[in-house]
Each structure stands twice: as structure tokens, then as C-alpha cells.
Image (cartoon, rainbow, N blue to C red):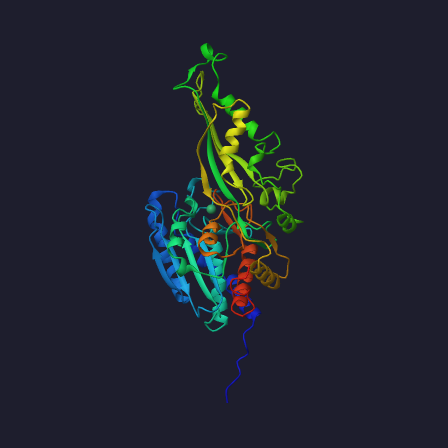
Length: 474
Ligand SMILES: [Zn+2]
């Protein structure tokens, strides 16, 4: 007589994932990944990028049944790209998972005493270390959740998973577009479900269905070959810093409202975006920054300002030598500027509208240099069937409402996957705005990560349990 083995359930899978989280297994796995100093911003760290893929991820993925390959970046001097395929049956639903194994530079000397970039320190409910939030911790949570579901289901998922991990994200994902274009068939999927960036608030599970894009330019006033004596020439000759300041104040008013109106979504915030953002909280910066009520576009809510609108930021500006001023009228003044924009704006207008705006107020001498796109904006309809499916799954697993936002406030290379693979974008971030990614003291909140692994265990379970959106549904 055969003994009856009780059938494993969805909550068994979530419990298994949470056990691996609570018993320290996940933390030690994360520590191993963080210990590989895979910073893509310093050329001497390049070998660590490949090591992250080959030693950090490959053995783990092979154990989970993936067929793994590490490819050279199609562009010279940019880091390699890992693909991993786990195909059970091509007719089953297929999810594409994405992550990046590179980090920004370590900034070793700037971390608080006791902390450092290349080791994980646990303190006050946080895991500190470079990449804990951006992005090693996030893709590791998703894979650890998959591992728990596979163990619960006896090695069979009931769906296919494909994974792309790049190592040039912190350099603008250079080469990823070319790579995905070359491997369309290999990477074809029904949906991209992946994690990066922050939730709207630490305690609010979030789905972002796209990202804002980034457009950069330099504003420059270049008047002469070198500085001239401030006594003999000050008051007679034009001061580039003052002209630059006027140009900036013509772009944005004292209260953060963009005055180049051609830069903005022509019809205002679209109704569908307003609808999903109604009641959406914004916050959790944890002291990193304040939300200044009077700053930005009048009449918009904080969520609309950051998810449904464009913003203009001066990244850096310089005239003369602040560290060693001399008595001179400086030869030039420059500001490095950025626009963060949503898909509701045509990027072709940015340079043209600014040129016309400056010329109209007599600032023709202000030059716009090196203007161009860095990362394109992307957006899947917030009510897309795959978004609704993921939202329902997460709400079941976590027992709370999931906030959908039309795009994350930051940038990610989602456009590459939309353009080449036509997949809907379902970003499920596991971090928060105060995580200090890109600076010293980067960290992941343990409670948020714990919800992340539970949520993904539920997603993987549901993916293999049928009832996913019909292939090609939109
Ligand atoms: Zn980053």
C-alpha cells in the first residue's frame, strides 16, 4: 500500500522561504555576494564583475536547475552579462527575471565607523553593505524564494524562468540593449517580473510598471580664455556665473516649478496615472531628505510630482575655483543638469524647447552642450493583466494592500525589454528611499526583505499553479 504524502501547499512554500530567511541562511548567502567587490565604476574592479557572475551566482543557479552562460558585453570595456534558463515546457508561462550584479564604487573611507562596503553588518533591523539594496539583495531574495518553492514542489515549478544579470547598470546599462536585441528568442517571455529600487514607503508593498527616464545636458557660459582681474574688469565685463544663474532661474522658479513648459506632459498628468496614484503615500526617506510641501509643480500631490511628472535637477555647477578663489572674473560657468521624465513627454522637445526659451529672454550666449538621453522612460499600463495578477498574488501572501505606481521615480533599463521582447513590466522593489544606495551606509531593511521573500515565494507558487494571464494578453 502506498502511503499518502500530504500535498504541499502555497503556505508551505512561503513558510519554507521564511524559514531560510529567519534561520540566517539568506543573510549568509547575501554576505557572500556582498563580499565580491563588483563595483563597475572603477576599471581596476573589472575582474570582480565576472567573478560575481561566475562564483557568486553560477553555482547557485546550476543547483536550482538553470542552464547558465556568461557572455561578454557586446560593447568593449563594459562588464559581462549572465543568462540563465530554466525551461520545464515551452508552453508553460515564462517569466523573465532581471538583476544587476554591479554596484557603485565602495566609498570605503566614508562609511560610519564599524561599517564598510564589502561586508554585511547587521544593526537595528538593517543589513549594511554595498549592494544589499542595489541590487544584490533584491535579486538574491527572488532567487531564494524560487529555491524554496522548488524544494516545496519537489523540484518542479510548473513554469519557466529566464534570468538576465548585467554588470554595467551603474554605468547606464551600456550594452544591455544590444545584448537583448541579439538574444530575442533566447529571452522571450510572457512578463518581466524583477526587483530594484524603493517601495513608495518601507511598509507598503509596491509594484512599479515602468521607470522614469533620464535626459542630461550641460549648461555652459564660456566668455573668455582665462579669468581677468576683478578690480580692473569687474563691473565692465560680463560675469559668466551670474548669467548662468539667470539661465537656471529662467528654467525653474524659486519654488521648484519648471518654467520651460514645453518639457512637461502636454495634457497634464494622465487620468489613468492620477487614478492609480490617488492616495499613494510617499516617504520613508528616514532622514535622508525632506518632502518640502511648497516645492515642485503647484497643484500636484507628492506622488504625482515624483511618479507622474518630470523634474529638473542641477547635479553640479562650477565657476572659478571654489577651493582656491582668486580676484578674477571667471572665464566660464557650467552646470551639469538632468531631467527625469515620464513616457508622457517626447524627449525630442527637451533641447529645442530650452533653446527657444533661453533665446526668447536674451540668453543666446548660454550654450546647451552634450544633450542626450541616458535611460529611456518606460511604462506598462498599470491595469495590465500581469500587473493585476502579481498584485493579487502579493496581496494574498502579505495580507495587505499593494500600491501600484505607473513608473518608479528612478531609472532602470525596462525600455530595453519592452522594445525587444514586448514584455509587460512588473517591478516589485524590496528597498526604500532611505536605503542610501550610491552613498556610504547603504542598507536593506530586514523586515522589508522578509516581506519580499514571502511575496516572491507566493508569486513563484502561483506562476506554476495555472491561472496566469493568457499568453499575449494586454
Ligand atoms: Zn544603483
